[in-house]
Image 1 (tube, chains in turn purple, yellow):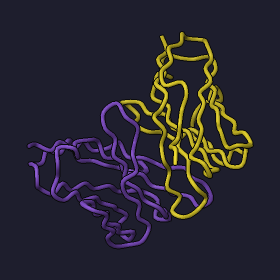
Image 2 (image 1 turned 90 degrees about the vertical axis):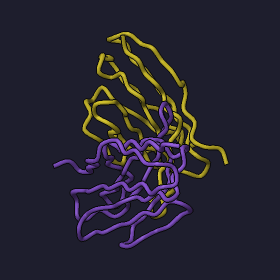
Image 3 (image 1 turned 180 degrees about the vertical axis):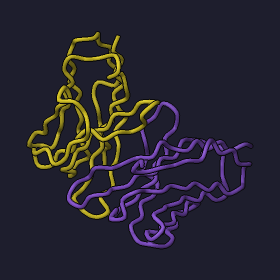
Image 4 (image 1 turned 30 degrees about the vertical axis):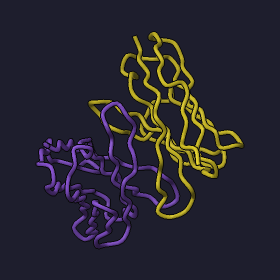
Length: 112
Length: 113
């Protein structure tokens, strides 16, 4: 079983719609969870961090964490063409160091 | 505040050579992690340094090594390069406070021919 899985294929959403991305992780003891956005040819950019069960909102982004079900999701409201990118889910599974395990990413395409 | 910087940005090497990549973290960040990104494997953890000590290591061969200096700057070295080492090498820095958010540099694109 992979440590972090993002199984959805490319996601196409119309401008103004909600994009929903999901991620599952294998280690029940994981503590910190992150979403990164990566534009083509660029490095990952941190957009959300969450470490308590529930929702965390930041602008048009909402991260949701459910530790019992071992999943974390990202909602992008009012999607804009500038949101077209690959979104990477990352999980810190160990206290005391900063090793992040990444999913393979989900490509989001916002259609004007 | 300046972000993470990495040098060089692009590098072309031939098989068998060695390469050294450099990373300067965000000011005040003492943890530096290195990742390799390839289309097939995605982002994979190489190692992390904190206070000049390697704190964690990923599942890479011993040809991959690193070090950290007293000013938190870090270098990674790859010896005896193989074609499969062609990748984007990313450095990330973080503070030692929860939730240990990591900020990535622009990366070094290494091509091995």
